[in-house]
Image (tube, rainbow, N blue to C red; front, side):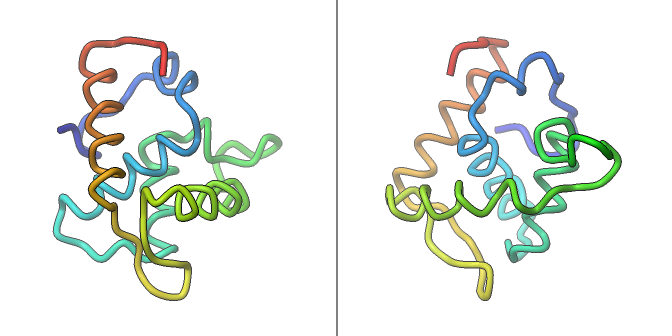
Length: 112
């Protein structure tokens, strides 16, 4: 699976849902053997997918508000566990979803 070392093209990731980008970012953090805190997740989302996780007016800054609703939805759909006060990790279903996203990135498929 790809991690943060290789940049993903904006044209490819901007068509992927924020939910899937967040799952991919959690995987990326944990694959580096790091704890996926809320702050670390914001950093990873912005580093990998800057145009999707920046303020519309100031593209140099990450917008943590973009994670709030998605994280609640992902937790409700049993794709991840954790919350902003602890750490996040993927469930088995979340890992499967992330693998499909990574495969689409590798194959440059734009429909997710």
